Image (cartoon, rainbow, N blue to C red):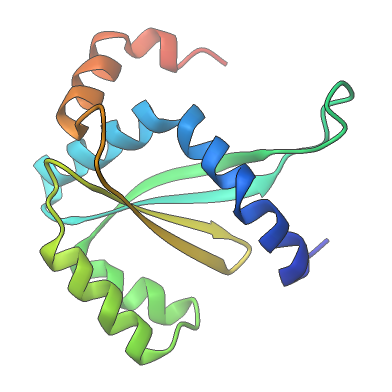
Length: 143
């Protein structure tokens, strides 16, 4: 079942903020590891709306696939998703100028609906996320 834009937008505000908060260490880990191995780029997360929790009566977002998209592939990926050329150019410009040691670029894709967030003023740096997840890898890979 394909969600309408209205449904996606309802999930965009509070659910996406919660999603980023709950997965921040993993997002930072992927961002810094990707930067170390492939240079500038963004964290790509393909999400699905999780079934509602009976206690909360509302679903959340769950990531079905994490990836790091290096800068050289961003243009093509965004064009393939149907974004306008002007929008793609603006995003590629941000990818070339963000500060990887202080910021994270996160692209959330839900069935072709794209949202890109530039996470700034981080309390935990991407390097620290990478270190923490690496040190506790077994905890992150449970289930």
